[in-house]
Image (cartoon, rainbow, N blue to C red; front, side, top):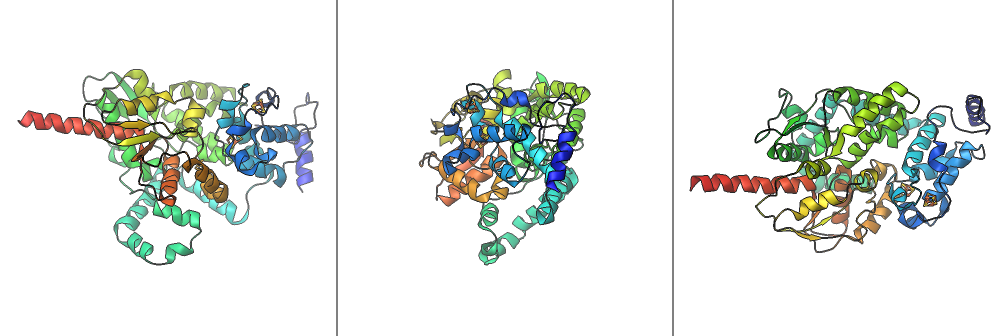
Length: 456
Ligand code: SF4
Ligand code: SF4
């Protein structure tokens, strides 16, 4: 069966092809991306999966070689290829380390799309994947209903009952670990501002920005979405929350479902068409939005629109840094370190801005973490699909987190959950916070002290 599919793929290639590729003709890994790899191995020490396994096929260089081998017809789209391709964290640390800037993450995502075309998920894996990726994440109302159920679970006493019983102990350890660190579910900002066209700036507006609220973000981390709005309006930005936006599609593209990724990308491009700036507070989502043009290589019309869209996208820390923000006067007296989310540092090149934001808050005793830009093992839903490797990557990460810090700050919700598991596992006392929350808390203190002074 697989042999027939491979033959079909080979014959569906463009007629000027001289190699007997084993890829499908559309949306296959781009030769230009691997052509610059000179097998120097400078990426090896940056790759978490290589450092853990010591195996070449789980290194960036090995993966590039495998991807090229399928293109040259030396390897089939089979399990032996799928395993190293899906074991990759898509963390992009290799591209940062590579002197030739080989886009290994981009190649991996394209290769995953090919694997899923040749070997679609079947059985319970197919059902679960389809339920979450197609049936849930892209639908705001359904996500809102899930949020409501989680809120009920947390507030009705059921969670307390479950935690007191042995019920959670019979769950797989990575799932019970996630339950233990589940943040308190709040109210989605999509819901809160559903009748508001423009959230006003505190003073004279200097700009108007649109905000991506995200799918999981607005359910599990709506407080961070609120902090993002607070910080933007405090710095004289008007904020809009476009209603017809949807999930960014990052999880779909990571999982090889590029068709759904394209569908969601088109919806977001249209939803933000009239906005000049799109601000994002989740590094994984921001990186996915910036890479929308990659999804439309074979579609010039949408590629053009995707390019125009991706130019408008900015991480919240970069936006504030570039446009200027008021330095808070109130202090947050905490010892803090910072973890670079892969899709912010490696994916978007944003490293200095969030650190500067932290250092601008009075009272913060900042400690730099060694290997701060090493992956924590979250990687979208990697910690669910590859729990053992995700745990091993987290264990390595935790070796670099200073033991005496009171807070670990970062800019990505997936990392926040994963690092919370690390903190819990190693009995640390550090709170996990989004960088923008700290700025918001400092501003809130400023506002309270202004009100207090006004009363005196
Ligand atoms: S991906 Fe880059 S760093 Fe790694 S072997 Fe190839 S050229 Fe060298
Ligand atoms: S993206 Fe990360 S895990 Fe994948 S090959 Fe590169 S460094 Fe290794």
